[in-house]
Amino acid sequence: FGMAGNVSAKADIYSYGILLLEVFTRRKPTVEQFDGDFSLRQWVAEAFPVAISDVIDSHLLNQSNNTATERSAATARKEQVVTIMEIGLSCSRESPNERMEMKEVVAGLGRIHQKT
Image 1 (cartoon, rainbow, N blue to C red):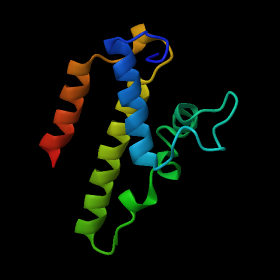
Image 2 (image 1 turned 90 degrees about the vertical axis):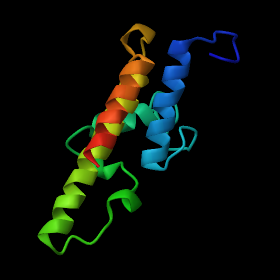
Image 3 (image 1 turned 30 degrees about the vertical axis):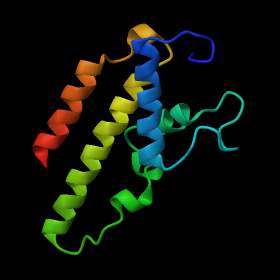
Image 4 (image 1 turned 180 degrees about the vertical axis):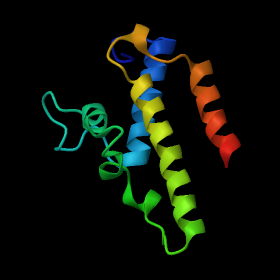
């Protein structure tokens, strides 16, 4: 969008969504895995929400879960990451009209922060 001179808030939202997906999967949208019609967004969307652990950076969820407290914390952490991935997917929808507004993104991330 930016290279073509089509800069807008909706393009910024798209970029933010892709950035979230990159950070939490630890994958760049330019790796060989994502070529042709298969994209980072599509990869995450296909895993969401049931198999989301398969695409999330394992370092984010890989903690010892020996006690009930640790298991509870791991479950809460996974729920937070799932919500962030949902925001990333919503921001990066194909149609600009279907993308979240930045105030919705901030509110969603704020709810995650309040739970911590």
